[in-house]
Image (cartoon, rainbow, N blue to C red; front, top):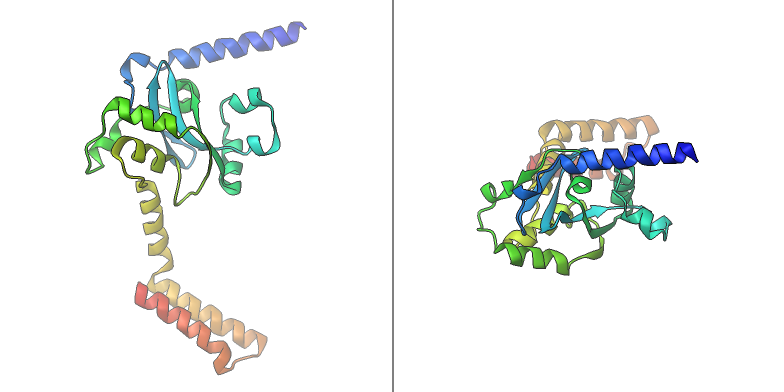
Length: 213
């Protein structure tokens, strides 16, 4: 009993420390909040009264009906498994839970996006209307698509664009074309089935990569 009380005391103290880390007077209703998290940047819309709406992958609703557990801060393990299973929700958390200990950028995307932001109340209303379960897509519907639609009226993701550009640079390169051709020919020689029918797909794929590079 004493151990439980002691653990609860440390949890409450830690929670209060996290909450006090963020000055809520800096945030206005409709602000776009941005924090680094794991391998990507996470985004949310400030609704006021220490509430942030954000789209976040989460595996827990699939394996549990415990609402109190689901309502707790989404850990990195829950998040990554949610990405894999494409399960997510647009939910409301406190600023501290949303930020996950990271520093928060406010309306940084205003400098990047070529459209002016909508009125703060309209931004927040859009976010509130979309609350609930959604199907997650790393490329087509992630947290950045959500906030960009709410604040600027267009669901785009600069992170996705940069990711696709990087993949294109790696895949559609001359080196990749050479390696594809060598691997294809080498595999055919190893299997002893060097025929026009086996070489043609390898050459076509290599040629396509070469032309796209």
